[in-house]
Amino acid sequence: MIALERDLGNAKLQNLVNKSIELFWKFGFQRVTIEELCRESGVSKMTYYKHFNNKIDLVKFILREMTTQTYEKYNLILAQDIPFEEKVRQTIDLKMEQTEKMSQEFFRDVYAYNDPGLHDFVQAHLGKWIKKIHESFLEAQRKGDIRKDMKPEFIVYFLNHMTDMMNDEQLKKLYANPQEQIRELINFFFYGILPVR
Image (cartoon, rainbow, N blue to C red; front, side):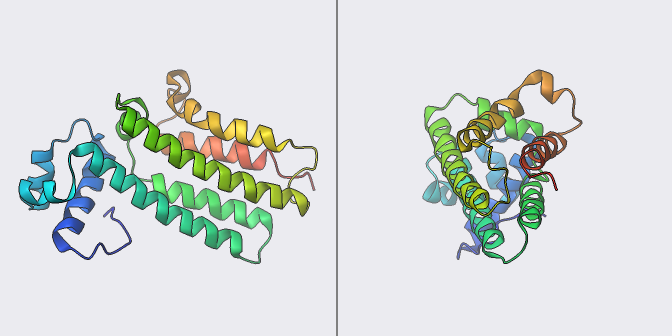
């Protein structure tokens, strides 16, 4: 079952969030109603609205929690005393683990849903990730793990445009599911920057 790893300290809230993740990942969040979320998780609408103003609040909460967990795991990967190539492999595995059950519908909803607040929220979190990855790559470049002739600005540019590539309809058609597409983009990105040995 897909669930948050952190205990939220409230059984009803935990069940609501975990059931929401399961349904959102499968159907996207636009198709799932608050009534369905309450019915499937066994919580009342009163409980729902005690924690969230609307469905977008819940989506943001879930994305924030998942991003925080992934960020912590990424920091643990970077802190290890292992070769950079192994850090890359673990980072790819982490990304795949985080997106394993997400449907194309969920990705579409997150990136195409017409809500400025959600759009700004997603962009802010992506910006934080890109900054962290950029910093870690600069450090790897200083250590000789990434080509010296690679422009750090290109890394940032490419990372910024991976989201656009995920949403490109022509590119989507080449893959059976979002995970396949993500793996291809990540592998291309990471293994395209490692030095030739």
